[in-house]
Image (cartoon, rainbow over all chains, first blue to last red; front, side, top):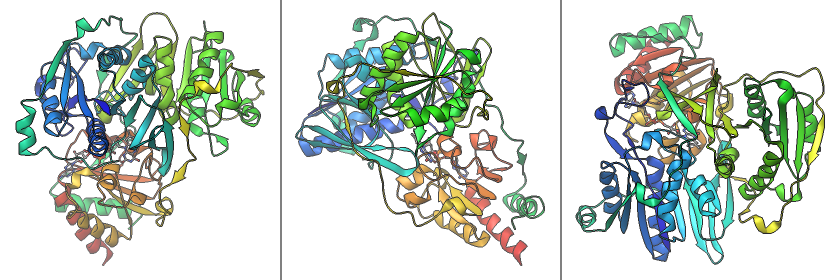
Length: 256
Length: 321
Ligand SMILES: Cc1cc2nc3c(=O)[nH]c(=O)nc-3n(C[C@H](O)[C@H](O)[C@H](O)COP(=O)(O)OP(=O)(O)OC[C@H]3O[C@@H](n4cnc5c(N)ncnc54)[C@H](O)[C@@H]3O)c2cc1C
């Protein structure tokens, strides 16, 4: 089975973010980057399938030069080879423009299965995989925790709201968006890190993929979120803060 | 092109609350008279009647045997035909798991992008939605002509109560073929029997990824025991197996509304917030002063939970003596 895993590099969630001077994006100079968490689970699911059924896992990522570190990480974890779509204008592409780029690169590979995370930790649109499936004319299922291969294709476990699940049968080829937590992520071994350096990393220029559509939605401005409640911030040493809070819980909230 | 379609969704035999909220959001985009509430399914008469009693404009039943059970292929095919016929200016959805599953592809079919998970609509119109897991908010605008597809976040718009007139109901029958539907969905099921009912807990101490390791969970348990509270968690804690899944609060877990909800080391992603926003008093403990959890908190302490939680346990003990 040939599986393509589309991976996004996103700002590390532990690092504070600042709005840039233009108010249109975040200050990238401050940031550290990491693999989008649901994408890491998509990669793991692809590797589990490969461990069981053989085949090839190909990592696909679009973005500027810095994305190569995340691609190397995926290769170190065991992906066989990688495709890097080089583009510096991620912030200006909308979900459709992005999906068009990915779909064009995927078409060249003719995979049996395309996996990606269900949403990114930065923009959080949750649409890339679904649109890629539409553009490729493939069946799709979202919020997937687990994939089993069988005679007529795959059976997947889909998460529903409030603790419910559902199994779905799909023919191959297909596109799935993977939810975090369905599998345990493997770590890269020293050996894996060493071997990653020798694995094929193909670079494609976005301009060569023949996709040129103007965006249909734009991010006009970034703001700090509005507070929904007036919060009493309690300060002091941990002991002082704890004592103050307990006092409030007693006299204002009446729960102690 | 001035019409607004609102795709209503039902859950457990009733129109879900978030669909009424989507209908309220639609009223920010145009005249009530131009709003058509759409119900989709194999038998939609009962739902259409429920909607008609409250909808401001018209109601349209999109009905076909192949629309039950839900499949993305079926819904996309049916709604595509409806949208082509109606040529609306807007199509508004509740941001549910089902909508996430098909609406982006439906929009792409019209060369458009769904502006998803919208929290507010202002003039122009500008659509606000969360970025960076709620740490920032972005204002999005639709460019050019063409239909604008929007989905709205749960709890963001106040659902209006009953309308005085009953809306008229029409029927639309899409042309569909069984071969169009490529996926075969099974019956929904629940994982394991629930043994804890967080929904009726008076007090909850909830822990997130800020706890760092499984061993540290004991400090949360101690605080909970001292208070007489239940222990709950954000999703990553349950995914990691540090606490059982039945203690997960949020959109894919339980919805709770205790008198007191203490969130320790939880960032406040929307999927967590929808499960606990209704708590009477929310206390947030987080080392990041900009964590979104503080936006919904009544009391906040910025600092290391490894110091604050044990201090709190001691302070509660002292207060109870
Ligand atoms: C479809 C879908 C469904 C989901 N369903 C749910 C759900 O039901 N429930 C749910 O919770 N999530 C759900 N999620 C996941 C959700 O989006 C978030 O990823 C998750 O809630 C984050 O959990 P967290 O706050 O514990 O972790 P993080 O976001 O990593 O936050 C950790 C927080 O701890 C703080 N911290 C770190 N160290 C310390 C310290 N020493 N002292 C104090 N604070 C510290 C950090 O500042 C940070 O704010 C869902 C996601 C999707 C896409």
